[in-house]
Length: 198
Figure 1 (spheres, rainbow, N blue to C red):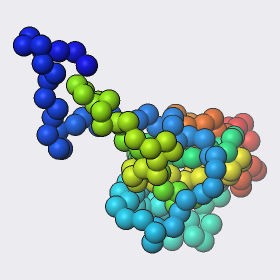
Figure 2: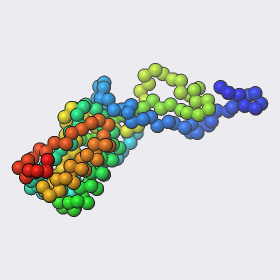
Figure 3: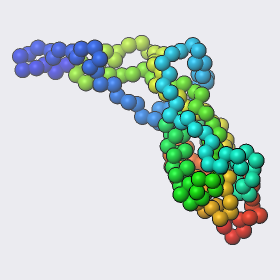
Figure 4: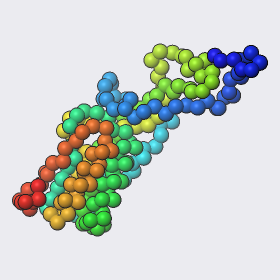
């Protein structure tokens, strides 16, 4: 540890003054190990950022009254954090709503962040090495939630009319940029209405 002008070690910060570095999201991208979803065994799990999973014209969406249905599918198995799901939902909803109006589409997020993410927090700053040295493979504290998805699993689905197909496709393309893996846009229903558009 570096010494100060008087040749003494600097005083350690008081409790609560440590700067905890937020770890990058790529640490939680891979879906490995046993799933950890039992909330009754642990406390202090942060609330999920995403709270609305069905937007637009919900009644028409439930009845499948829209002739065209597009889906965003992930290409690889991974974990999608709740913040990434909320960011994807916001950009999709804003894009398709501007083109089709509030009742011209139905948007559904098809995954839920059940997976509890844990982190063994490390302190940063002067003298942090004294605090950060602890047990190996420590259990850690709950820092968030994520949705564990498999290959080719559906994440977001949009139902709309053929006139707004281009806007819906562009909305799902923007959502792809928010996810931690590559994904594909698939037309599930309504190919006969999209001649010359696909």
